[in-house]
Every structure is written in C-alpha cells, then in structure tokens.
Amino acid sequence: MLSLQILNSTIKMKSIKIFAALLLLSSQVMGQSVLDEAKKEIDKENYAKAKNLLKKTLADGSTDRIQTAYYLGNAYLKLDDADSAKICYRIPGFENKTVYGQLSNGRLWLLNGDKAKAKTAFENAAVTSKMKNSEVLYQIGDAWFRPTITDLSEAIKNFEDAYKLDSKNTTNMLELGDAYLENNEGGKAMSKYESAAEVNPKLTLAFIKIGRLNERARTYDDAVIALKKAIALEPDYPVPHYDLFEAYFLGHKYDLAKAEIRKYIELNKDDADAKTRFLNFIFANKEYDQVASEAAKMIDADPTNFVILRALFYSNYELKHYKEAGDFATRFWVAAPTSKVKPLDYVYSAKIASKNNDTAQALKYFTIALATDSANGDLLSDYALLMYNTKRYPEAIDNYNKRIAKFPNPTFYDYYYLGRANYSVALKFKDQKDKDSATAYFTAADSAFNIITQKYPTVPDGWQWRAKANNNLEGEVQSGRSKPYYEQFVKVVEAGTDQARYKNFLVESYQYLGANYIIAKDKVTAKAFLEKAKELDPANDFTKELLKQVQ
Image 1 (spheres, one colour):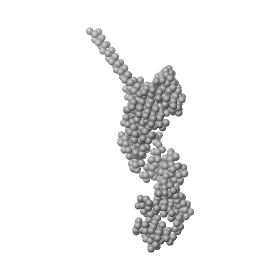
Image 2 (cartoon, one colour):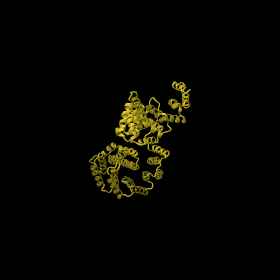
Image 3 (cartoon, rainbow, N blue to C red):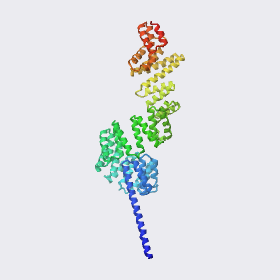
Image 4 (cartoon, one colour):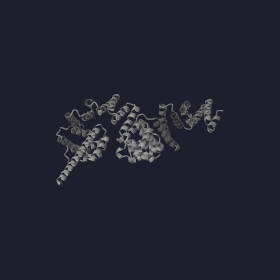
C-alpha cells in the first residue's frame, strides 16, 4: 500500500514537472514570437510599436534577455532616445561574449564615441557567429549606418557581406540601397529597392523606399504611384501615409497632404511626435487658427511638451493674440531643453515681447536671435522697428541701413521707417537750431521716401513724407520745392478710396498749394484748393485767413 502511494506521488510530481516545462516552453515560444514581431516592426520603421512590444517581453522574461535588450536598444536609438538605448545596451555587460552581447557593446562604444573599441566588438560578434550569420553582419552594418552615419564604407562592406550570405534578405537589401544612396549612387540604390520588391512583391517597405527615392529626385508623381502601392498592400501601416503626405506637400497638393498626415496620426497613436509633425505642417501652410486649436487640445494632456508650446506661441503671435503668445512663450522657455532650442524661438520671443511692450525682454531675445541667425534680413528689420518704436532713432537708422545694404528685397516698411527715423532726428536738430545737422537728416529722410515713391507710386505715404521733408528743407519762405510732392499726394489720394485716412494732411496740402498759388498771384487756382480745405475742415482758422487773401 505504501509503495502504491509513493508510486502515485512520483507520477504526480513528474506530471507537474512536465506541465511546468511545457508552460515554460510555451512561454518561450510565445516570447520568441513577440521578439520576431518586434524585429519586423523595426524593419518596417514602426519603432514606437516595436519598443512597446520589446519592453513588455523584456519585463516578463519570456525571451532571451540579452537579445531582447539589444533590439529594444535599437528601437530607442531609432526613436532618437540615445540615453534609453545605452541603458539597454549595458544590460549584457562588457564581459558578455555572446553574439548579441558583443553587438550591444559595439553599439554602446559607438554611442560613447570610441570607434576603435566598437569595431573590435563587432569583429568579435562576427567571429563568434563564424561569419555565417547574415543577420549579424546586417546588424553591424546598421550600427555603422543608423541613426547617424559613423562609417559609411564599413556599413556598405558589412551589408554587402550579408548580401553574399543571403541574397534574399530583403531587410538587408533595402538598407544596402539606403547606404548606396548616401554614397551618391542613386542608380544602385534603386536597383536594390526594385530587387527587394521582386523577391517579395508584397514587401511594403520596398515600395516606400522607391517612393522616397523618386521624391528625392523630385519626380513626385512617380513617388505617389509607388507609395499608393505600399498603402494598397497595408492600408493600416502608418509610414507610407506619412511619406505620401510629404510627396503631396512637396508637389504643392496641400489638401491631399493634409488628409494623409491626418491618416498617419490616426494610425500611429503610439508615436507622440506624429501630432507635432501635423502641427508643423499646418503651421508651414499658414493655417494658424487650426494650429492654435489643435495644439490647445494637445497641451492639456501633455502640459510640458515644449514642441506643442512652441506651436502655441508661434501661432498665437501670427493670430495677433500677443498676450496669449507671451504666456505660452514663458511656459516654453521653462519646458524646452537648451539643446532643443531653435534660432526661430528667439526670433518669435523677441517679436512677442516687442508687441507686449516688454522692451527689456525684446532686446534680450533680439540680441540672441541676431547672434544665432545673422543671415536673417527680416529679423534685422524687426529689430530696427523695435529701435524706432522705442525712439532709439540713430540705432533704428543704423539697422535699417544694414538691412537695405546687406540683404535683397528691402520692404516698403524698411524704407518708410528709415525715412521716419531720419525725419525724427532732423526735427530734434531743428529744435536745437543746428541747421546743418537738421538739413543732413531731412535730406536722408527725403532719399528714403523718394525710393518709396519710385517703388510704390500709388501709395500716398511716400508723397506725404517727401512733401513734409522738403517743406522743412525749403524753410519758412515757400520756394516751391515741396510743391510737386504736395500735388502728387493730392492726386493719389483724390484718386483713391481712403481719403478719410489722410484727411488732416490733405487739408495741409490744400493750404500749402493755396498759399503757393497766392504767392504766384494765381488767385483762382489758390481759391480752388482753399475751398477744398474748407470743405474738409470748415472751422480751420488758417484756411479762413488764406481765403481772405483771394476774395
């Protein structure tokens, strides 16, 4: 009886062990399946999805920890997160002699800037695999090539060696094509892409690569054809939708582009950058209302996302919501890492501070912006305008002159405010009875306004300010120097539809011309001008005095 109990107990223990072994084996099989799926997602450039799969399988221990950590590091690296990639590559430790341990070490040495040690680690990985594993050689090539090119010749050599071992490995073929393209061998690149498509006619990424190469060659219609083939193969694959968006955008088909970027976002919810790419697109398309609206929805869920905050303060500035723009700019400067700040951030911050009358902040940001983006003529114009608005006229003159001398296509306002700044300085010298200095600045003002009258002859402002400058130059005795400019001002305004805007100077012009014709003893013409002045401003005493002289 006792022996039968022992026998039954032994059978039960064996059954439990067999069941446990089956469970472990099942877990490993499932884990390997997830690892393989994640590797495919990396090959398909679905890096965020691959990362999530690999993190889960690494945590549950259902796969080879070292191999999983290696591919997880690759996913992080492709997502531009080098710090997280390093953590994954450190898991095997430098003493690990397995193939994936040495591949991890090689990647880690590359990230730390030591190419010599990286090369040694990669050579050890190749030797450990007995130079017969195309995946290992492909990974070595990929390490030298992605995400930044460390050694293009090493990358091509390893890709080509991998191709010799396995000419049907389409992942390697496609990246070898990418490497050829970086080496300015577009024909060889296209050949590899097309060969991959022949090996596997359902290989979506092959058609994506063909589309990208056509896009690079600016044959956008051919790019669209290839990318539509990719989408037909996998309608729910996000990547070709993004590439098709770019092809449409570069081909100036903006409505079609917008539809594709929206589809990309819908399909790629794991990609936090997808929505910000959409913001960048609609901002570039000057749809500022939509940028502000979309970004406002996003920021609630991610209040410290500096990319979204950037979109908010840029778009609110463009919408002339200067207070809101200032508030978002303040939040942006708290949230943005120094390494991610762009020259344009300083530019917009300077403009916003200027609009909000925060002169100290405006000067601070303009100084940095001009130092970081010295080739920006429009920025120099904005800075000069700040100088003008804060009555720093000599500095405004200096910066407008630099803008006009150094950069093409000066604007109306460059000449207008240059003239106004010179005019303001001239008035100061006139008050000080410094006739020579006043004359010099009134002449400089007239020169700026003269360019406006040549470039924009139907705009009254140029004629108005030429009249004012020359009126000061001719002094109290009316020599008639200003007369042509007053006459042209009157002619342009009377022919236009905005007379109310220029009413005050129109009255002054009629008075000047009336007085000028009185001096010339032409009372009929003088009276005609003075009657027009009286019609616009019946209570004007000066007009009344002049009319007495023509009765």
